[in-house]
Image 1 (cartoon, rainbow, N blue to C red):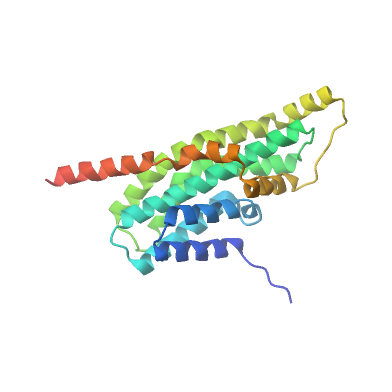
Image 2: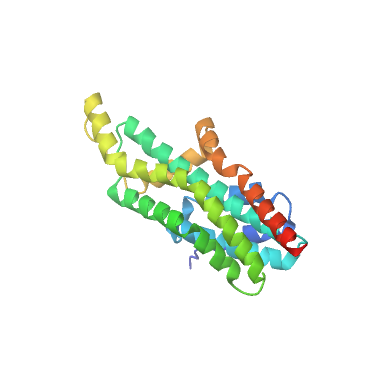
Length: 237
C-alpha cells in the first residue's frame, strides 16, 4: 500500500524546529519557504504554505518560550516575505525567459500561478495574523504587533508580486510577438512546465533574481517595529 506525504506537514515541522532552535531564524526559514514554493502548487498553494510556516513557528515558540517573542515573530514574518519574494521573482523570470525563447506555457498553469500570487497579495497579513491567533501561545498585543509587521512586509512584497502578475497577463502577447519576430511556429509547453521552470529558476538563484529579491530583505520593517516599541515605552513613562 502506497502512502503520500503532506508537504505542508513537513514544512510545519521544519518551521517548528528552526524557531524552537532560535538561531538564524530568518535566513533558515526563508530558505524553507523558497524551497517549498513550487511544491505548494500540489498542496493548497502559497497561502497554505504560509499557514504551515506560521503554525510551525507558533508551536516552536510555544516550546522554546524565548525572552523576546516579538523579535522572533518579526523574523518569522520577514522570512515569509523573503521566500515569497524570491518565488515571485522566479515566476516572472521564468515567464520572460520562455517568451524570449518562443515557448508558451499552458493557460491552466498561468491561471494557477495568477490565482496563487493574487491570494498572497490579498491575504498575506490576514493569514499570518489568523495563524498566530490560533491557540493561546501569544497575547493579543503580540499578535497585533506581528500583524502590523505583516502589513509592512506585505507592502514590500507587493511590487515583486505585481510584476509577476503583469508577466502572467503579458505572457501570451509577448510569446506571440517573439514568435512572429523569430519566424517560428508556436511552441506550447506541457501542463506543469511553468512550475518546473520556476523550480529550476529558484535552484539557479541567478544574480538578477537575488538583486531583485533583495528589496524585501531590507531591515526597514525592523526599524518600523523598533519605532513602535519606542513609542510604546514612551507612553509608559
